[in-house]
Structures are given as structure tokens and as C-alpha cells.
Length: 211
Image (cartoon, rainbow, N blue to C red):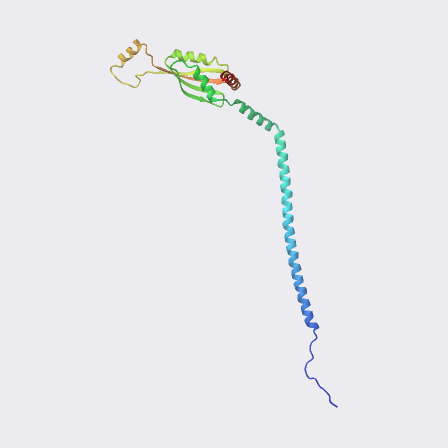
């Protein structure tokens, strides 16, 4: 009788290899699940932060709108609006003022300087031949309805020989007197005008100029 004796080690079952693959797959799945959960948590935090910012911005916008509405309804806003309206009404045409002031100048009368301030005041420097011409011009200014006040604040005469030193100066002055030649006369006026009156005068002037 023949008896077979197998001295080779027995082969391990294939189940152990399968177990290794299963464990590896499970580990990979767990890793992927962890990464997915971390990403989800991170994105959710960012989304929550954005939502909180939007809510905060909306609250700030609502608060600003409420504050603006309260300001618009307050006395300060009304006063500011009134002041702006008043300032716009006070604007005048400086060209029209210059035209009116030039129209009443006497012969050989010249405006040297004109300054219009925001306080409805005009400072005017005018050159005349005589002192009486300066007085006549003041009277003419007061005839304008848009002028509330006109005052002669300064006046001076400038001798044509001023600054010259000569032995004949006395003789020259006597000749001037004999020839009835008077030195130039400069006058400074301060004029307080009425803006509404100027606007009315402008409309009247435009009506007269139109055909």
C-alpha cells in the first residue's frame, strides 16, 4: 500500500487577503468622510459669517435710514433748507449792478474799483473832476429803489503836482486856480442793496430792452 506524505506547508486561506483590502477601503472611506466633514464644517462657518455680516449691514442700513429720516424731519434740516433757499434768493447779477452804477456817472466820472460782498453790500471807488460831482452821484445812487442805503465814507483830492519839488510850484498852482482847473477827486461809497429789489429791477430792465 502506498502512503502519500505532503511535507509542504498548508496555504493560507484567501480570506486574510480580502480582510486587508476591506480594512484599507474602510480606512480610505473614513479619511474621505473626515475630509468631507471638515470641508462642510469650514464652509458652513464661512456661510454663517457672511449671513451675520449681511444681518449686521441690514441693521446698520436701517439705523442710518431711520437717523436720516429723523434728521429730515428735524428743525435743523428745515433750517438748513430754509438757509439754502434764502442764499439762492440773495444771488444777484454783478454785471447788472455795474451797469446801473455806471449809467448815472457824470461826465468824466470813472469807476476805479467795485467790490460786491455776500452781505448785500457794495464798496465803490469813483474818480470825479470835482467834489460837487461826487455829491451829485451820491444823490443819484439814492434814487434807485433797490438801494437801501448809500454813504460817502471817504474822499480825497490828488493834486497833479503832488510829489514834485520845484521853485515854480507856487506859480503853477496859481495858474491852475486862474484857469479854474481843479485836481482830481476820488470818492469811496458804501452801498447796501436789496436783493429782491435788484431782481425786480432786472426784470423791468429786461422788459424795456425786449422789442
